[in-house]
Image 1 (cartoon, rainbow, N blue to C red):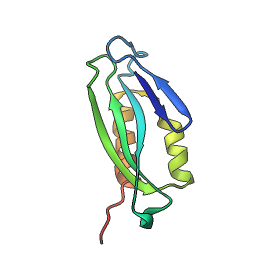
Image 2: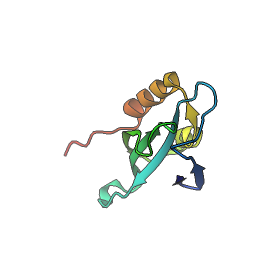
Image 3: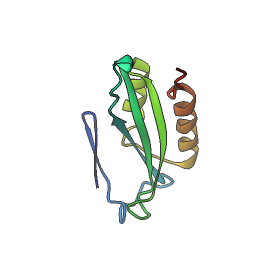
Length: 106
């Protein structure tokens, strides 16, 4: 499978790819369109959590909705296309939910 995010392309074969020791997940950030002009300068989408040694559809997702700022860009650059273990996944998931998911109250 070919995953493209921003200027990065990740390759993974979900059926046969064997990860480095103790690295059971691959992260991929997927941005989605925001059509409301009120949120110009924001980003929304999902962080896909792929389990490459299982079926091609074996993934979870964690949603994000946040201003596109230096903190967000640095975070995505650090974790996009990265193979991680369960402890790292828990840490990254907490960060996304705490810092990069804004609730809209209109």
